Image 1 (tube, rainbow, N blue to C red):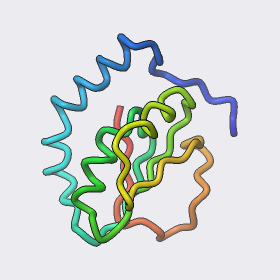
Image 2 (image 1 turned 30 degrees about the vertical axis):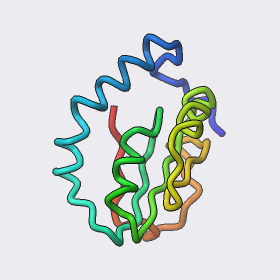
Image 3 (image 1 turned 60 degrees about the horizontal axis):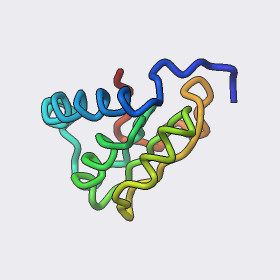
Length: 110
């Protein structure tokens, strides 16, 4: 992994802020993304995994892979509801471990 700096803090107040931001903006993003049931999706910077879970419910015949730099954020995301088509990995957005063409949709927010 590179020596990238994690931008968002991981203290509980910051996590509450990020969760609220997700609740406020996810519906509009979900509508914009037009995810299909069979899509394979990559979310770069999954944070708490809130949006990734929402997208995974739509891509129920496909898959959603979330990649997150922060082990603290990833631990919280993994403790939340699990879905069979959702995989959360620790990794760096600057060095993605995926082959070209694997995903139908790739996005990164915040």
